[in-house]
Every structure is written in C-alpha cells, then in structure tokens.
Length: 317
Image (spheres, rainbow, N blue to C red):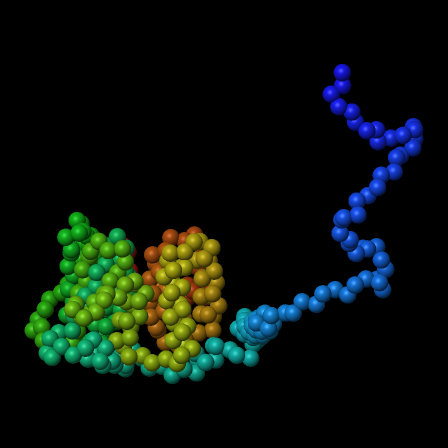
C-alpha cells in the first residue's frame, strides 16, 4: 500500500502542464530596455575632504616631478666633461699657503689649560697601525715643539719594536712646560683608533679619517667650501673604499684618482692636504691586485719625496 500520492506534473507525452505563478512577489525593473528608456543613475555626493586630498596629492606629485627634473639636470651637468660648471677651475683658483707658513690658535682649538701642556692622546691597535697619524705627527713636529711618547696598554701582549719606536728615539732635553703640544700614542686593543685631548670634558674622536682631519686642522689651512667638500670626500673614499672596499671598488677609486691627478698635482688642488696623506697610507696598506695608473704612481713618488712619509714607510718594512 503506497504511503502517499504525488500529483503528476506532466499530462500527455510532450505536453507541459501550465502552472499559475504566484502574484505575491515584488517587481523588478526591466533590464533589457534601451538606453533611452533606462532610469538615470543615482548621483552620489563626493566628500569635500576627499576632493581636497586628491588636489593636494596632485600638487605634491607635480612638485616631486619638478625636483626630479632639477636633480637630473644637475647630475648631467656634473657628469658631463664639458659642463659649464667646472670644479677644477675653482680648485685651481683657491689660494694656498705652505704648511710651514700657516698657524693655528691651539688655545681656541684645544682649550686653555693655564700653563699645562695640551696633550693629544691616541689609542690605536698595533694589528692595524694608523699610518696617516704617523705622517701627521712628523708634519706637526716641523711646525710645533711636540713632546712625543709611545706606551703599551695591558690589553696588548706584544708590540713590534718598530711600532714602539714609530716616533723615533725620544730624548727629552727640555722641561715639559717648554713644549707647545703633547702627542701620546697608546697601543691598545681597540676596534678603531680613538683620540682625546681633554680627558674630562670630551667624547673620543673615533676613526683614522676623523682623527687625521682634526690633526691636519692644526696647521690652520683655509679652503673654500667646494675644496673642503672634495677633500672630505677623498678622505672617506680612501678609508671606506680604497682601504676597506672590494677589488672592484678599489679599481674605481684608482681610475678616479688618476683622472684628478691628471689635472692637479695633489688630490685637493695645488697643495698637499689631508686627503693625500690618508689616500697614500691607504694605498700602502691595501692588498689589491689592481695596477696603479701612471698619474697615481707619479703622485705617490711625490709623496714619498717628503720626509714625513718615510717614517710611515719604515713601519711597513
């Protein structure tokens, strides 16, 4: 016996039985009408703050584009050999005076000690001797009466004999107050050279390049802004690329030096600067397989003809 009956949906074969659609459903607009009969879209109001933000963004993008155009123009001007702005002309026009003719006010640079000797104390690691500081010490000895001393810190077990005598034989024949400047080098286990001239009131100056800049400033040389910037750039290039960089970086620096030294006898122009001292010392300590260009070789010989550079060469033997 069947449990329930189902009303048939189909009548005769092939004929579909019509069913009444419900009349309670909601109506929709006809989506197939023509464009003319379509209902107008609803216009939403735009927030004024969004319009202001969009306008501000367009203004910023416009200014960025103008700045980019200006920077591109400056870069082309500097990189183009026949540019209207030639830095070499400014370097050659700069006025120089020999190092022996210059002077610096030690009281203004190192502070007044009211009769006490102004003592510059440098800590350096004997495994990486700062050659540029040895050269600068010799140059300073030609300009000032310097009381030099070399000591060994307890953090260092053994120091080669040539490093202990890097300032030569020190025979003090005068009393301490008759010297203008003290120069004390302490061989110590430090990651990078450190310098102080006022133990109580200053933080140490770290890095061979920074110390070399300060020591060279004691000669009182004055340069214009362009020359000073180029000298600082050569010092950083010598330390971070020529001395510590890869072979590719060293080769690029040598090419740049060769180009510069083809126009001027020294890296900073017509006179020896701290850039030449630091770069020469970096070349002596670098282990590069790159061939030294002709202009650089000529410049190195000019450096080695100066007596202060010989003291640094003795440390490499």
